Amino acid sequence: ELYEKTYDGEKVIYWEVKYPFPLSNRDYVYIRECREMDVDGRKIWVVLAQSVSVPQCPEKPGITRVKSYKQSLAIESDGKTGSKVYMYYFDNPGGMIPSWLVNWAAKSGVPTFLKDMQKACRNYSK
Image (cartoon, rainbow, N blue to C red; front, side, top):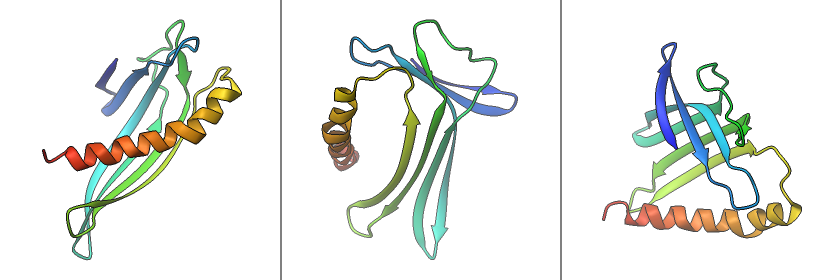
């Protein structure tokens, strides 16, 4: 489930993420700001996101709310056919996550995510 709504004049995103069995799903409630910048003639896109708490999005039974989430992303053309991407990402998924899964995410999950992102970027114009 993923949607964006406006509460008190602020756009808020709700996102429920499926986690593998036997873990419970996680959900995020956050604000996001996107800006296109011109720095000395270079186009740079900046995306900032951070978790928020809004009464209109209460926690759901059986789903763990990620209360600590922050992302900063900058994308810039490399001047040819590619892009440079800089990303800071943090979230505390909460709950009891087995150490084997944390180790897998650090060793395999993150590199796979980055390869998938690179592939998606390469195929974007197609």
